Image (tube, rainbow, N blue to C red; front, top):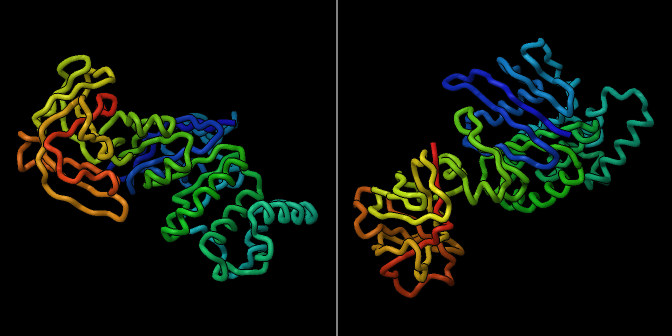
Length: 347
């Protein structure tokens, strides 16, 4: 199965322009709040209508502006999980799940599907409870059960963990990922949390101001984000303007250094990124004198801010993040970073 999206929709100060194809597995739409992620899901589900374009699911056209096709949400076979789960507060777990089967007339079929999904979602014994009597994780499973009981062709998740506290959110990620893998079809998940996207997804599509900047396998995106915005969204703390000097050499005026790169430098280079974990006092490559600025302590890591020897005091300090047990007894006079760890960023 596959989902093909190529749509445009005017959204206030910018235009949503989303074009991608999703194959089997979990794909995350990663981006800041207000960039068009949730609107993309709503257009796929039929809750919102694009201004133009096409949406095709497994060879079936859900929307085609040129042909006047715009299937209603109930005809799309798309499951949509809202951020707040949208459970009916006065209904029991059983009643909420059965709402997903309101088009099924055969009572025996309804009961069979209900038993199957309750077992699959580990909700046995909770059928008579109302949402207020459930934990956040249980509410999430009921909301998913209500969607999955109707056998959707694709599942759309809009910030599925945002309604949960931090501890519960972390404990449910693995459970949710395993469940979605058993679902065995396309899952499109919206998130602004890079760790969530990394933990849950086979691929990540990065969005910014309505544009889909790139879509890559998860580990490939973090290794080579490709653009400044993608680098920011994947957690890169050190980004500076740069210019190409040679096929494997760039100049960073703000830091007053030149960096050798393993990756070939393209002509459209605009910046470089250095991840905070990649600095090493013993690294031979890209090794330069540095001066200490300040230190911040976290529960399990230390963040050291430094500047390169000739770096202006007015420019932001560079981040070096390391485990507490790896912290050197005194700040080193020089730091290096491997050529393979230089992120080349383009417009």
